Length: 415
Image (cartoon, rainbow, N blue to C red; front, side):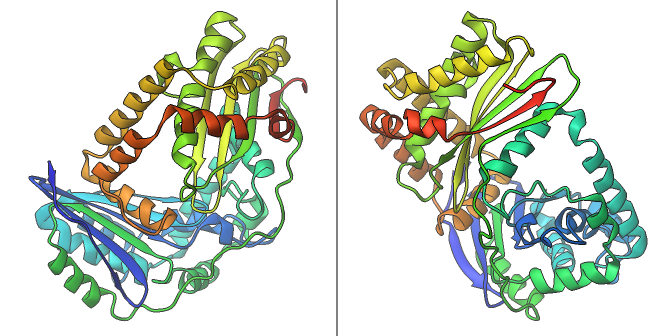
């Protein structure tokens, strides 16, 4: 697919819109992010978990359309869609054929401006949220990742978003309507559209559909520093789940790319990374191990997970820490070249779908305030040097940094 230039403009007095036509595309993808995230949910009070419920309930009818009528309207247009909640926002994602774009935007605008939020829809959405909350410990790896976020990130950005039983029980249609009206504003919202799309036509349509929308959302702010330290979650099991977390650069940080490549060598990019080779293959200490770099607008987090047996958990943790310290001594030219190729391949292949491209437009606008082309991103990777990566690793993986890492262990015994 051949791309054209990306247009960025504002509508409704504040919502940023990025439109990228892709020549030869037959589908159009939309990613619409509104500032109703978990960080803005009530703090330790009734209503905790409202963003997760809203993400589900807003798709159950809007405007004059009941839940069934709304769903049928989407199906008639052939739309594939979903909603999800995250720290800063609720995101509406949809893909349709080019000729259905106008109808899709009309329906999504109804969701944003006039969700019905009726009692039966709330009851069903709350039941789903309670099921998700109740099943958290059924997946120990997921549970460990949630607990590490709770201690490694500052409040209120450390919330898992599933809420509490009391908080979910307290939600009413009136409270959710009030929350949506207060928090879902054009200021803080971002819309990305990629594929078979005409920028001028979309701009005129959005200005018409959103003419009555105004205001700006209140940005969540840090209310307490990260707890840090070590947490052991007792669980009767034949496995121990270990999660380590370290602060990492945010997306706009000039060193974020060096950090991403370092993490790829450390614990990502298939079975050639160091943690997989040294901890799992050579020593057989665990059945699963890897590293992930969550790169956000305001902060980043490097997390490392390993699943082991209680008997070998302490040795697994020691080996991971040893590999982190060894990484501070630098990576080889061969590791660097392999990681660069893998990173570039992922960027290009993930960017070849209209859905991925729409998501990238929104992600760039939110995290760095501007849109990058695929070519620009690839060029950034190609300009990175081995010396830059090794210099970065030597500064962020020192013993003092590792001593301050957050640690969560889910299993029968602490480490």
